[in-house]
Image (cartoon, rainbow, N blue to C red; front, top):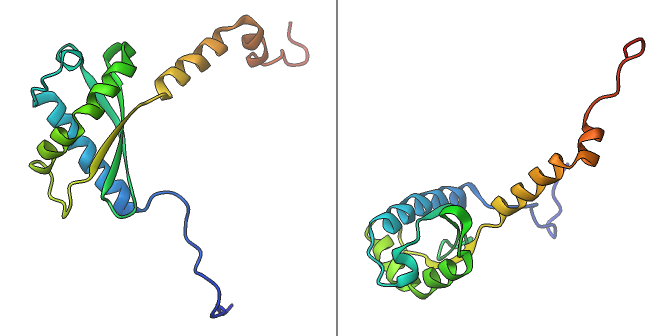
Length: 141
């Protein structure tokens, strides 16, 4: 089937391989920066942070880093502190990655852990659990 001149080629939805590779590169480097950098902030002094995912913009100039504080405690204040120090972290990140541009950073709390815990609690509910057990086969008691 021939393409008509006025039709746009269909683009796959979701991030490109380039965005995924760059996101993983930034995630690893950012985790290292957070592990080693001394951020002068009382909230960050006692926080251990996991970088769960980094999503890159199509031009690779902006990165959204999904983070989870150890134990999930004080997530809001940790994310606020990280965003306050995003320029400093970007500077540190630039030393650890080989990209044409060091992306601007935005930090958000990764809600997937909370959602997984909520679903786990749902499965533990006796009313739900009874629906998960298969009925006995014919002839079995």
